[in-house]
Length: 566
Image 1 (cartoon, rainbow, N blue to C red):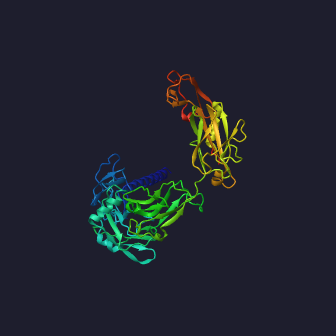
Image 2 (tube, rainbow, N blue to C red; image 1 turned 180 degrees about the vertical axis):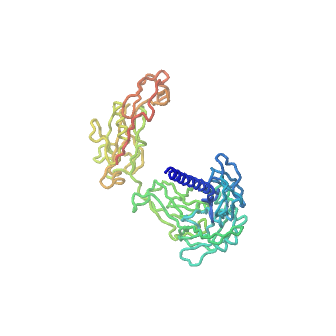
Image 3 (cartoon, helix red, strand yellow; image 1 turned 60 degrees about the horizontal axis):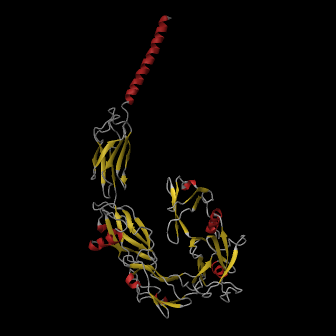
Protein backbone atom coordinates (compact mmCIF):
# COMPACT_ATOMS: atom_id res chain seq x y z
CA UNK A 1 0.00 0.00 0.00
CA UNK A 2 2.81 2.39 0.87
CA UNK A 3 4.51 1.60 -2.44
CA UNK A 4 1.35 2.36 -4.36
CA UNK A 5 1.03 5.75 -2.53
CA UNK A 6 4.66 6.62 -3.39
CA UNK A 7 4.07 5.79 -7.04
CA UNK A 8 0.92 8.03 -7.05
CA UNK A 9 2.77 10.96 -5.45
CA UNK A 10 5.59 10.59 -7.96
CA UNK A 11 3.13 10.67 -10.86
CA UNK A 12 1.50 13.90 -9.50
CA UNK A 13 4.93 15.51 -9.08
CA UNK A 14 5.88 14.48 -12.61
CA UNK A 15 2.71 16.03 -14.02
CA UNK A 16 3.33 19.29 -12.14
CA UNK A 17 6.98 19.42 -13.24
CA UNK A 18 6.13 18.73 -16.88
CA UNK A 19 3.40 21.37 -16.79
CA UNK A 20 5.79 23.93 -15.24
CA UNK A 21 8.42 23.11 -17.83
CA UNK A 22 5.86 23.51 -20.60
CA UNK A 23 4.87 26.92 -19.22
CA UNK A 24 8.48 28.09 -19.06
CA UNK A 25 9.05 26.91 -22.62
CA UNK A 26 5.88 28.62 -23.74
CA UNK A 27 6.91 31.89 -22.04
CA UNK A 28 10.33 31.62 -23.57
CA UNK A 29 8.76 31.02 -26.94
CA UNK A 30 6.50 34.06 -26.45
CA UNK A 31 9.56 36.21 -25.79
CA UNK A 32 10.59 35.37 -29.34
CA UNK A 33 7.23 36.74 -30.71
CA UNK A 34 6.46 38.81 -33.86
CA UNK A 35 7.52 42.46 -34.06
CA UNK A 36 6.09 44.64 -36.85
CA UNK A 37 5.17 48.21 -37.76
CA UNK A 38 1.56 48.80 -36.77
CA UNK A 39 1.23 52.07 -38.65
CA UNK A 40 3.20 54.40 -40.90
CA UNK A 41 1.91 57.77 -42.11
CA UNK A 42 1.74 59.30 -44.63
CA UNK A 43 1.62 56.91 -47.57
CA UNK A 44 0.51 57.33 -51.16
CA UNK A 45 -0.11 60.76 -52.69
CA UNK A 46 -0.72 63.45 -50.09
CA UNK A 47 -0.38 67.23 -49.69
CA UNK A 48 0.71 69.52 -46.85
CA UNK A 49 3.25 67.17 -45.28
CA UNK A 50 5.48 68.35 -42.45
CA UNK A 51 6.16 65.11 -40.49
CA UNK A 52 6.24 61.32 -40.72
CA UNK A 53 5.17 58.99 -37.89
CA UNK A 54 5.82 55.27 -37.34
CA UNK A 55 4.38 53.06 -34.55
CA UNK A 56 5.96 49.68 -33.71
CA UNK A 57 4.06 46.80 -32.14
CA UNK A 58 6.74 46.27 -29.44
CA UNK A 59 9.02 48.52 -27.45
CA UNK A 60 12.04 49.45 -29.56
CA UNK A 61 14.08 51.61 -27.16
CA UNK A 62 14.42 51.69 -23.40
CA UNK A 63 12.55 54.29 -21.41
CA UNK A 64 14.58 57.49 -21.17
CA UNK A 65 16.96 56.52 -23.99
CA UNK A 66 15.18 58.37 -26.78
CA UNK A 67 18.14 60.03 -28.53
CA UNK A 68 18.97 56.87 -30.46
CA UNK A 69 19.65 56.38 -34.18
CA UNK A 70 16.73 56.52 -36.60
CA UNK A 71 15.23 53.11 -37.42
CA UNK A 72 14.92 53.98 -41.13
CA UNK A 73 17.21 54.72 -44.03
CA UNK A 74 15.64 57.88 -45.47
CA UNK A 75 15.73 58.83 -49.12
CA UNK A 76 14.09 62.27 -49.48
CA UNK A 77 15.24 65.57 -51.08
CA UNK A 78 14.08 67.61 -48.07
CA UNK A 79 16.09 67.32 -44.88
CA UNK A 80 14.60 66.68 -41.44
CA UNK A 81 15.27 65.21 -38.01
CA UNK A 82 14.00 62.01 -36.39
CA UNK A 83 13.17 61.47 -32.70
CA UNK A 84 11.58 58.86 -30.45
CA UNK A 85 8.44 60.04 -28.66
CA UNK A 86 8.45 56.94 -26.46
CA UNK A 87 9.53 53.31 -26.69
CA UNK A 88 7.22 52.48 -29.63
CA UNK A 89 6.58 55.76 -31.49
CA UNK A 90 9.05 57.49 -33.81
CA UNK A 91 8.57 60.85 -35.59
CA UNK A 92 10.48 62.52 -38.41
CA UNK A 93 10.09 66.32 -38.72
CA UNK A 94 10.91 67.99 -42.04
CA UNK A 95 12.66 71.34 -42.03
CA UNK A 96 9.85 72.85 -44.16
CA UNK A 97 6.52 71.94 -45.72
CA UNK A 98 7.00 69.63 -48.68
CA UNK A 99 6.17 71.18 -52.02
CA UNK A 100 4.66 69.37 -54.99
CA UNK A 101 6.69 66.85 -56.98
CA UNK A 102 8.60 65.25 -54.08
CA UNK A 103 8.95 61.49 -53.48
CA UNK A 104 10.25 60.18 -50.14
CA UNK A 105 11.12 56.58 -49.17
CA UNK A 106 11.63 55.25 -45.62
CA UNK A 107 13.26 51.75 -45.46
CA UNK A 108 13.88 49.88 -42.22
CA UNK A 109 17.50 49.17 -41.42
CA UNK A 110 18.40 45.54 -42.07
CA UNK A 111 19.44 44.43 -38.59
CA UNK A 112 16.91 46.48 -36.60
CA UNK A 113 15.60 44.66 -33.48
CA UNK A 114 13.26 45.49 -30.64
CA UNK A 115 14.47 45.91 -27.06
CA UNK A 116 14.27 42.09 -26.54
CA UNK A 117 16.33 41.34 -29.60
CA UNK A 118 13.47 40.31 -31.89
CA UNK A 119 13.77 41.12 -35.58
CA UNK A 120 11.17 43.20 -37.43
CA UNK A 121 8.87 41.21 -39.67
CA UNK A 122 6.32 42.30 -42.27
CA UNK A 123 6.51 45.34 -44.53
CA UNK A 124 9.85 47.11 -44.34
CA UNK A 125 9.68 49.88 -46.96
CA UNK A 126 7.25 52.82 -47.05
CA UNK A 127 6.95 55.74 -49.48
CA UNK A 128 4.78 58.71 -50.34
CA UNK A 129 4.71 61.57 -52.83
CA UNK A 130 3.30 65.09 -52.76
CA UNK A 131 1.76 64.69 -56.19
CA UNK A 132 1.50 67.14 -59.03
CA UNK A 133 1.27 70.95 -58.64
CA UNK A 134 -1.93 72.08 -56.94
CA UNK A 135 -3.47 75.56 -56.73
CA UNK A 136 -3.33 76.87 -53.14
CA UNK A 137 -5.10 80.20 -53.82
CA UNK A 138 -6.46 82.27 -56.68
CA UNK A 139 -6.69 86.00 -57.21
CA UNK A 140 -9.41 87.01 -57.62
CA UNK A 141 -10.66 84.46 -55.12
CA UNK A 142 -13.06 81.71 -56.14
CA UNK A 143 -16.78 82.61 -56.15
CA UNK A 144 -16.03 86.25 -57.06
CA UNK A 145 -19.08 87.44 -59.00
CA UNK A 146 -17.72 90.52 -60.78
CA UNK A 147 -14.63 89.46 -62.71
CA UNK A 148 -13.76 91.36 -65.87
CA UNK A 149 -14.20 90.21 -69.47
CA UNK A 150 -10.40 90.09 -69.92
CA UNK A 151 -9.74 88.97 -66.36
CA UNK A 152 -6.20 88.06 -65.37
CA UNK A 153 -5.86 85.26 -62.79
CA UNK A 154 -2.93 84.99 -60.40
CA UNK A 155 -2.52 81.43 -59.10
CA UNK A 156 -0.43 80.50 -56.08
CA UNK A 157 0.90 76.95 -56.43
CA UNK A 158 2.43 74.47 -53.99
CA UNK A 159 5.44 73.66 -56.15
CA UNK A 160 7.35 74.33 -59.38
CA UNK A 161 5.33 73.68 -62.53
CA UNK A 162 6.00 72.71 -66.12
CA UNK A 163 4.39 75.62 -67.97
CA UNK A 164 3.89 73.60 -71.17
CA UNK A 165 1.68 71.18 -69.26
CA UNK A 166 -0.45 74.13 -68.02
CA UNK A 167 -1.16 75.32 -71.57
CA UNK A 168 -2.09 71.75 -72.50
CA UNK A 169 -4.26 70.82 -69.51
CA UNK A 170 -5.68 74.04 -67.98
CA UNK A 171 -8.70 75.76 -69.58
CA UNK A 172 -11.87 77.77 -68.96
CA UNK A 173 -15.45 76.51 -69.26
CA UNK A 174 -17.98 79.26 -70.01
CA UNK A 175 -21.74 78.77 -69.59
CA UNK A 176 -23.40 78.77 -73.00
CA UNK A 177 -20.18 77.98 -74.88
CA UNK A 178 -19.45 74.32 -75.61
CA UNK A 179 -15.77 74.57 -76.50
CA UNK A 180 -13.25 75.08 -73.69
CA UNK A 181 -11.26 78.33 -73.82
CA UNK A 182 -7.49 77.96 -73.80
CA UNK A 183 -5.25 79.79 -71.32
CA UNK A 184 -2.31 82.06 -71.93
CA UNK A 185 0.59 82.40 -69.48
CA UNK A 186 1.81 85.96 -68.96
CA UNK A 187 5.51 86.52 -68.39
CA UNK A 188 8.15 89.18 -68.08
CA UNK A 189 7.49 92.83 -67.15
CA UNK A 190 3.73 92.50 -67.76
CA UNK A 191 3.52 89.63 -65.27
CA UNK A 192 5.47 91.55 -62.62
CA UNK A 193 3.44 94.70 -63.16
CA UNK A 194 0.15 92.84 -62.75
CA UNK A 195 1.28 91.04 -59.61
CA UNK A 196 2.54 94.27 -58.07
CA UNK A 197 -0.52 96.33 -59.00
CA UNK A 198 -3.24 93.88 -58.02
CA UNK A 199 -1.98 91.00 -55.94
CA UNK A 200 0.55 92.66 -53.63
CA UNK A 201 -1.93 95.30 -52.49
CA UNK A 202 -4.02 92.49 -50.96
CA UNK A 203 -1.32 89.92 -50.13
CA UNK A 204 2.00 91.70 -49.42
CA UNK A 205 3.92 88.49 -48.70
CA UNK A 206 5.69 87.24 -51.79
CA UNK A 207 4.88 83.68 -52.82
CA UNK A 208 7.53 81.35 -54.26
CA UNK A 209 5.38 79.84 -56.99
CA UNK A 210 2.97 82.14 -58.83
CA UNK A 211 1.51 81.80 -62.31
CA UNK A 212 -0.38 84.57 -64.13
CA UNK A 213 -3.04 83.35 -66.60
CA UNK A 214 -5.65 84.92 -68.82
CA UNK A 215 -8.15 83.46 -71.29
CA UNK A 216 -7.50 83.57 -75.03
CA UNK A 217 -10.97 85.04 -75.63
CA UNK A 218 -13.16 87.60 -73.89
CA UNK A 219 -15.73 86.42 -71.36
CA UNK A 220 -19.37 87.47 -71.92
CA UNK A 221 -21.03 89.66 -69.28
CA UNK A 222 -23.06 88.24 -66.40
CA UNK A 223 -21.93 84.66 -67.08
CA UNK A 224 -20.55 81.84 -64.93
CA UNK A 225 -16.95 80.91 -65.74
CA UNK A 226 -14.99 77.90 -64.45
CA UNK A 227 -11.21 77.74 -64.36
CA UNK A 228 -10.20 74.07 -64.64
CA UNK A 229 -6.72 73.20 -63.36
CA UNK A 230 -6.76 69.85 -65.12
CA UNK A 231 -5.21 66.49 -64.43
CA UNK A 232 -1.91 66.00 -66.20
CA UNK A 233 -0.35 69.32 -65.19
CA UNK A 234 3.18 68.42 -64.14
CA UNK A 235 5.84 69.62 -61.79
CA UNK A 236 9.28 70.36 -63.19
CA UNK A 237 10.26 66.87 -61.99
CA UNK A 238 7.55 65.35 -64.18
CA UNK A 239 5.00 64.40 -61.51
CA UNK A 240 1.44 65.02 -62.81
CA UNK A 241 -1.80 65.96 -61.06
CA UNK A 242 -4.29 63.09 -60.98
CA UNK A 243 -7.57 65.02 -60.66
CA UNK A 244 -9.04 68.36 -61.71
CA UNK A 245 -9.29 71.45 -59.51
CA UNK A 246 -12.22 73.68 -60.49
CA UNK A 247 -12.69 77.33 -59.48
CA UNK A 248 -15.99 79.08 -60.21
CA UNK A 249 -16.37 82.80 -61.02
CA UNK A 250 -18.99 85.07 -62.53
CA UNK A 251 -18.38 87.98 -64.84
CA UNK A 252 -19.69 91.45 -64.04
CA UNK A 253 -22.89 92.85 -65.47
CA UNK A 254 -22.89 95.17 -68.52
CA UNK A 255 -21.58 98.69 -67.88
CA UNK A 256 -24.42 100.97 -66.77
CA UNK A 257 -24.92 104.35 -65.15
CA UNK A 258 -27.78 105.21 -62.80
CA UNK A 259 -29.10 108.38 -61.21
CA UNK A 260 -29.96 108.52 -57.51
CA UNK A 261 -31.58 111.12 -55.29
CA UNK A 262 -33.64 111.09 -52.11
CA UNK A 263 -37.41 111.39 -52.59
CA UNK A 264 -40.28 111.56 -50.11
CA UNK A 265 -41.98 108.80 -52.14
CA UNK A 266 -41.23 106.99 -55.43
CA UNK A 267 -43.42 109.34 -57.48
CA UNK A 268 -42.09 112.56 -55.97
CA UNK A 269 -39.27 114.72 -57.32
CA UNK A 270 -35.82 114.92 -55.76
CA UNK A 271 -35.55 116.59 -52.37
CA UNK A 272 -33.70 119.79 -53.35
CA UNK A 273 -31.68 120.18 -50.14
CA UNK A 274 -30.04 116.75 -50.48
CA UNK A 275 -27.28 115.58 -52.86
CA UNK A 276 -27.83 114.03 -56.27
CA UNK A 277 -25.59 111.19 -57.42
CA UNK A 278 -24.53 109.40 -60.61
CA UNK A 279 -23.43 105.84 -59.85
CA UNK A 280 -21.60 103.40 -62.14
CA UNK A 281 -21.40 99.64 -61.72
CA UNK A 282 -17.74 99.66 -62.84
CA UNK A 283 -14.82 102.06 -62.28
CA UNK A 284 -14.56 105.10 -64.54
CA UNK A 285 -11.55 107.34 -65.08
CA UNK A 286 -11.77 110.36 -62.78
CA UNK A 287 -10.69 112.59 -65.66
CA UNK A 288 -13.74 111.50 -67.63
CA UNK A 289 -16.03 111.64 -64.59
CA UNK A 290 -15.17 115.33 -64.10
CA UNK A 291 -16.96 116.06 -67.37
CA UNK A 292 -20.33 114.98 -65.96
CA UNK A 293 -22.53 118.02 -65.24
CA UNK A 294 -26.05 118.89 -64.11
CA UNK A 295 -27.67 122.02 -65.57
CA UNK A 296 -30.82 124.06 -65.13
CA UNK A 297 -31.76 127.24 -67.00
CA UNK A 298 -29.51 129.41 -64.85
CA UNK A 299 -26.63 127.35 -63.50
CA UNK A 300 -24.25 124.48 -64.18
CA UNK A 301 -23.38 122.16 -61.28
CA UNK A 302 -19.99 120.43 -61.21
CA UNK A 303 -19.40 117.00 -59.61
CA UNK A 304 -17.50 115.99 -56.50
CA UNK A 305 -15.77 112.63 -56.25
CA UNK A 306 -13.60 110.44 -54.05
CA UNK A 307 -10.78 109.26 -56.30
CA UNK A 308 -9.06 105.90 -55.81
CA UNK A 309 -6.06 105.23 -58.07
CA UNK A 310 -7.47 107.59 -60.69
CA UNK A 311 -10.88 105.89 -60.92
CA UNK A 312 -14.29 106.50 -59.36
CA UNK A 313 -17.55 104.57 -59.19
CA UNK A 314 -19.82 107.51 -58.44
CA UNK A 315 -19.96 111.29 -58.53
CA UNK A 316 -22.15 113.51 -56.36
CA UNK A 317 -23.66 116.96 -56.66
CA UNK A 318 -24.16 118.28 -53.12
CA UNK A 319 -26.69 121.05 -53.81
CA UNK A 320 -28.84 122.59 -52.44
CA UNK A 321 -30.84 123.00 -55.63
CA UNK A 322 -33.78 125.24 -56.53
CA UNK A 323 -37.12 123.66 -55.76
CA UNK A 324 -39.58 122.59 -58.45
CA UNK A 325 -36.95 122.94 -61.14
CA UNK A 326 -36.14 120.77 -64.17
CA UNK A 327 -32.49 119.72 -64.49
CA UNK A 328 -30.59 117.91 -67.26
CA UNK A 329 -27.76 115.46 -66.57
CA UNK A 330 -25.06 115.34 -69.25
CA UNK A 331 -22.51 112.54 -69.58
CA UNK A 332 -19.43 112.79 -71.83
CA UNK A 333 -19.78 111.04 -75.18
CA UNK A 334 -18.37 107.52 -75.55
CA UNK A 335 -18.10 107.12 -71.79
CA UNK A 336 -16.15 103.92 -71.04
CA UNK A 337 -15.26 101.98 -67.90
CA UNK A 338 -11.81 100.76 -66.86
CA UNK A 339 -12.18 97.77 -69.18
CA UNK A 340 -13.01 99.90 -72.22
CA UNK A 341 -16.70 98.94 -72.26
CA UNK A 342 -19.23 101.39 -73.73
CA UNK A 343 -22.13 102.42 -71.52
CA UNK A 344 -24.99 100.05 -72.34
CA UNK A 345 -27.68 102.56 -71.36
CA UNK A 346 -26.01 105.54 -73.04
CA UNK A 347 -29.25 106.46 -74.86
CA UNK A 348 -30.85 107.24 -71.50
CA UNK A 349 -28.71 110.39 -71.31
CA UNK A 350 -29.01 113.39 -71.33
CA UNK A 351 -31.43 112.62 -68.51
CA UNK A 352 -34.03 115.10 -67.27
CA UNK A 353 -34.92 115.12 -63.58
CA UNK A 354 -37.00 117.44 -61.42
CA UNK A 355 -36.75 118.67 -57.87
CA UNK A 356 -39.75 118.75 -55.59
CA UNK A 357 -40.72 121.56 -53.24
CA UNK A 358 -38.54 122.03 -50.21
CA UNK A 359 -39.77 119.51 -47.62
CA UNK A 360 -41.39 120.78 -44.44
CA UNK A 361 -39.02 121.23 -41.54
CA UNK A 362 -39.25 122.04 -37.84
CA UNK A 363 -36.05 121.30 -36.00
CA UNK A 364 -34.24 122.27 -32.81
CA UNK A 365 -30.45 122.08 -32.82
CA UNK A 366 -30.61 119.29 -30.22
CA UNK A 367 -32.68 117.78 -27.43
CA UNK A 368 -30.81 119.81 -24.84
CA UNK A 369 -29.10 123.19 -24.91
CA UNK A 370 -27.88 126.04 -22.70
CA UNK A 371 -29.08 129.58 -23.46
CA UNK A 372 -27.54 132.67 -21.88
CA UNK A 373 -30.02 134.47 -19.65
CA UNK A 374 -29.14 137.81 -21.25
CA UNK A 375 -30.95 136.69 -24.41
CA UNK A 376 -33.40 133.91 -23.47
CA UNK A 377 -34.62 132.99 -26.95
CA UNK A 378 -34.74 129.36 -28.11
CA UNK A 379 -33.90 129.01 -31.84
CA UNK A 380 -35.85 126.64 -34.08
CA UNK A 381 -35.35 126.10 -37.82
CA UNK A 382 -38.53 125.94 -39.89
CA UNK A 383 -39.60 125.67 -43.51
CA UNK A 384 -42.77 124.91 -45.50
CA UNK A 385 -45.06 124.23 -42.58
CA UNK A 386 -48.79 124.79 -42.11
CA UNK A 387 -50.38 125.23 -45.52
CA UNK A 388 -53.56 126.52 -43.82
CA UNK A 389 -51.80 129.76 -42.85
CA UNK A 390 -53.63 132.70 -44.24
CA UNK A 391 -51.65 135.49 -42.59
CA UNK A 392 -48.48 136.21 -40.59
CA UNK A 393 -49.95 137.79 -37.52
CA UNK A 394 -50.54 136.68 -33.97
CA UNK A 395 -54.26 137.11 -34.49
CA UNK A 396 -54.64 134.65 -37.31
CA UNK A 397 -57.16 131.88 -36.73
CA UNK A 398 -54.64 129.50 -38.21
CA UNK A 399 -51.23 129.33 -36.56
CA UNK A 400 -47.95 128.72 -38.37
CA UNK A 401 -46.68 126.77 -35.37
CA UNK A 402 -48.54 125.80 -32.25
CA UNK A 403 -46.71 124.60 -29.16
CA UNK A 404 -46.60 124.33 -25.42
CA UNK A 405 -43.97 125.41 -22.93
CA UNK A 406 -43.38 124.16 -19.40
CA UNK A 407 -41.01 125.52 -16.77
CA UNK A 408 -39.27 123.15 -14.36
CA UNK A 409 -38.18 124.35 -10.90
CA UNK A 410 -36.38 121.36 -9.27
CA UNK A 411 -33.32 119.42 -10.39
CA UNK A 412 -34.93 116.04 -9.64
CA UNK A 413 -37.86 116.96 -11.89
CA UNK A 414 -35.32 118.13 -14.48
CA UNK A 415 -33.72 114.67 -14.52
CA UNK A 416 -37.07 113.02 -15.17
CA UNK A 417 -37.87 115.47 -17.96
CA UNK A 418 -34.47 114.92 -19.56
CA UNK A 419 -35.14 111.18 -19.68
CA UNK A 420 -38.63 111.79 -21.05
CA UNK A 421 -37.41 114.12 -23.79
CA UNK A 422 -34.52 111.79 -24.70
CA UNK A 423 -36.97 108.93 -25.25
CA UNK A 424 -39.74 110.96 -26.90
CA UNK A 425 -40.94 109.94 -30.34
CA UNK A 426 -42.40 112.10 -33.07
CA UNK A 427 -46.04 111.05 -33.02
CA UNK A 428 -47.02 111.87 -29.40
CA UNK A 429 -47.00 115.02 -27.33
CA UNK A 430 -45.11 114.99 -24.05
CA UNK A 431 -46.74 118.17 -22.72
CA UNK A 432 -50.43 117.83 -23.52
CA UNK A 433 -52.30 117.55 -20.26
CA UNK A 434 -49.32 118.59 -18.14
CA UNK A 435 -50.26 120.94 -15.34
CA UNK A 436 -48.70 124.36 -15.80
CA UNK A 437 -47.98 123.91 -19.53
CA UNK A 438 -48.73 127.12 -21.52
CA UNK A 439 -49.61 127.30 -25.18
CA UNK A 440 -47.88 129.85 -27.39
CA UNK A 441 -48.30 130.96 -30.98
CA UNK A 442 -45.42 131.98 -33.22
CA UNK A 443 -45.89 133.46 -36.69
CA UNK A 444 -43.37 132.95 -39.51
CA UNK A 445 -42.30 136.45 -40.44
CA UNK A 446 -40.99 135.47 -43.89
CA UNK A 447 -44.00 133.43 -44.95
CA UNK A 448 -45.09 129.83 -44.97
CA UNK A 449 -42.46 128.50 -47.42
CA UNK A 450 -39.45 130.43 -46.18
CA UNK A 451 -36.48 128.61 -44.73
CA UNK A 452 -35.63 130.55 -41.59
CA UNK A 453 -34.52 130.38 -37.96
CA UNK A 454 -37.14 131.65 -35.53
CA UNK A 455 -36.80 132.45 -31.86
CA UNK A 456 -39.12 131.18 -29.11
CA UNK A 457 -38.94 133.70 -26.23
CA UNK A 458 -38.44 132.27 -22.72
CA UNK A 459 -39.35 134.12 -19.53
CA UNK A 460 -35.99 134.13 -17.76
CA UNK A 461 -33.48 131.87 -16.01
CA UNK A 462 -34.71 128.34 -15.46
CA UNK A 463 -35.13 124.88 -16.92
CA UNK A 464 -37.64 124.59 -19.76
CA UNK A 465 -39.24 121.80 -21.74
CA UNK A 466 -40.40 123.06 -25.10
CA UNK A 467 -42.45 121.28 -27.74
CA UNK A 468 -43.58 122.39 -31.16
CA UNK A 469 -46.03 120.60 -33.44
CA UNK A 470 -46.85 120.67 -37.11
CA UNK A 471 -49.65 119.01 -39.05
CA UNK A 472 -47.85 119.54 -42.36
CA UNK A 473 -44.68 117.91 -41.07
CA UNK A 474 -46.73 115.03 -39.68
CA UNK A 475 -48.55 114.49 -42.98
CA UNK A 476 -45.22 114.49 -44.82
CA UNK A 477 -43.28 112.14 -42.53
CA UNK A 478 -45.90 110.17 -40.57
CA UNK A 479 -48.91 109.94 -42.83
CA UNK A 480 -52.03 111.80 -43.82
CA UNK A 481 -53.87 113.37 -40.89
CA UNK A 482 -50.92 112.89 -38.49
CA UNK A 483 -49.31 115.55 -36.31
CA UNK A 484 -45.58 115.56 -35.62
CA UNK A 485 -44.07 116.77 -32.33
CA UNK A 486 -40.53 118.06 -31.82
CA UNK A 487 -39.41 118.39 -28.16
CA UNK A 488 -36.30 119.89 -26.61
CA UNK A 489 -34.94 121.13 -23.27
CA UNK A 490 -33.44 124.56 -22.68
CA UNK A 491 -31.49 125.65 -19.62
CA UNK A 492 -31.50 129.46 -19.35
CA UNK A 493 -28.57 130.50 -17.19
CA UNK A 494 -25.42 132.60 -16.99
CA UNK A 495 -23.45 129.63 -15.59
CA UNK A 496 -21.69 126.69 -17.14
CA UNK A 497 -20.22 123.77 -15.22
CA UNK A 498 -17.11 121.76 -16.15
CA UNK A 499 -16.94 118.33 -14.48
CA UNK A 500 -13.74 116.31 -14.00
CA UNK A 501 -14.46 112.77 -12.82
CA UNK A 502 -11.39 111.28 -11.10
CA UNK A 503 -10.64 107.87 -9.66
CA UNK A 504 -10.27 109.01 -6.02
CA UNK A 505 -11.58 112.58 -6.18
CA UNK A 506 -13.41 114.84 -8.61
CA UNK A 507 -14.12 118.51 -9.12
CA UNK A 508 -16.67 120.87 -10.65
CA UNK A 509 -15.55 124.23 -12.07
CA UNK A 510 -18.23 126.88 -12.62
CA UNK A 511 -17.70 129.90 -14.86
CA UNK A 512 -19.86 132.73 -16.16
CA UNK A 513 -21.09 132.57 -19.74
CA UNK A 514 -21.05 136.36 -19.92
CA UNK A 515 -17.38 136.97 -19.09
CA UNK A 516 -15.81 133.54 -18.60
CA UNK A 517 -14.84 134.27 -14.97
CA UNK A 518 -15.16 131.75 -12.09
CA UNK A 519 -18.25 132.03 -9.93
CA UNK A 520 -18.17 131.59 -6.14
CA UNK A 521 -20.89 130.19 -3.91
CA UNK A 522 -22.77 128.14 -6.50
CA UNK A 523 -24.69 125.17 -5.06
CA UNK A 524 -23.48 121.93 -6.66
CA UNK A 525 -25.34 118.61 -6.40
CA UNK A 526 -24.09 115.43 -8.10
CA UNK A 527 -26.95 112.98 -8.71
CA UNK A 528 -27.30 109.65 -10.46
CA UNK A 529 -29.83 109.11 -13.23
CA UNK A 530 -32.48 108.12 -10.67
CA UNK A 531 -32.12 111.47 -8.90
CA UNK A 532 -30.28 110.28 -5.78
CA UNK A 533 -27.76 112.83 -4.46
CA UNK A 534 -24.18 111.50 -4.42
CA UNK A 535 -22.49 114.72 -3.24
CA UNK A 536 -23.45 118.29 -2.31
CA UNK A 537 -21.31 121.40 -1.90
CA UNK A 538 -20.49 124.95 -3.01
CA UNK A 539 -17.86 126.50 -5.26
CA UNK A 540 -14.92 128.34 -3.67
CA UNK A 541 -13.56 131.78 -4.75
CA UNK A 542 -11.86 130.15 -7.75
CA UNK A 543 -15.20 128.70 -8.88
CA UNK A 544 -14.16 125.15 -7.99
CA UNK A 545 -16.06 122.65 -5.88
CA UNK A 546 -13.70 119.85 -4.78
CA UNK A 547 -15.29 116.44 -4.30
CA UNK A 548 -12.78 114.97 -1.84
CA UNK A 549 -14.08 111.43 -1.96
CA UNK A 550 -14.52 108.65 -4.46
CA UNK A 551 -17.65 108.75 -6.57
CA UNK A 552 -19.16 105.41 -7.67
CA UNK A 553 -17.72 103.71 -10.75
CA UNK A 554 -19.90 103.42 -13.83
CA UNK A 555 -20.65 99.76 -13.15
CA UNK A 556 -21.81 100.70 -9.63
CA UNK A 557 -24.33 103.30 -10.84
CA UNK A 558 -27.92 102.44 -11.78
CA UNK A 559 -28.57 101.85 -15.47
CA UNK A 560 -31.45 104.08 -16.54
CA UNK A 561 -32.39 102.75 -19.95
CA UNK A 562 -34.02 105.11 -22.39
CA UNK A 563 -36.74 103.51 -24.50
CA UNK A 564 -37.51 105.48 -27.61
CA UNK A 565 -41.16 105.99 -28.45
CA UNK A 566 -42.39 106.01 -32.02
